Image (cartoon, rainbow, N blue to C red; front, side, top):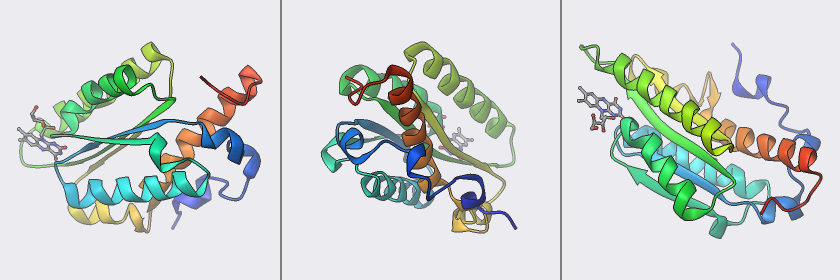
Length: 172
Ligand code: RBF
């Protein structure tokens, strides 16, 4: 069974900002309250992984929205009011008995992608779309790695790319 770490080079420092660069980064996290048992675990693991890579706690801005559907607006507001370098969207959509799941997941994914391209900053999509709670828990350190840690890695690897392209040690 593959795990998240099979897909990310966890040990490759060159893929990440160095400690001096990481110290100046501001990362916004938008977490949905729906299915909070899952989304809070995603969030705390992401925060820990960001800190382990040198991001300062005062530069990790965590805000909550009611459900996944509100995530794009929350991201847009954080970008506008918190002056972040990257955003992470944390949510968990569990399929019920109606098509609502499809409507919400499609709208959220499109909203995140549209916003990401418009604001020209990474927005990590850490919205789990699963058929049951067990599948979500498998993605919180189970058979499918930890999506909260992978979210932190993705945000930082994208900012490493930006540092490289701009040839700077400070993005603001
Ligand atoms: N929000 C989630 O974050 N995860 C869910 O699994 C979820 N399921 C929902 C199911 C139904 C039938 C409805 C009406 C809403 C659901 N929501 C869920 C909330 C949704 O993201 C949003 O907060 C509300 O629709 C209000 O805009």
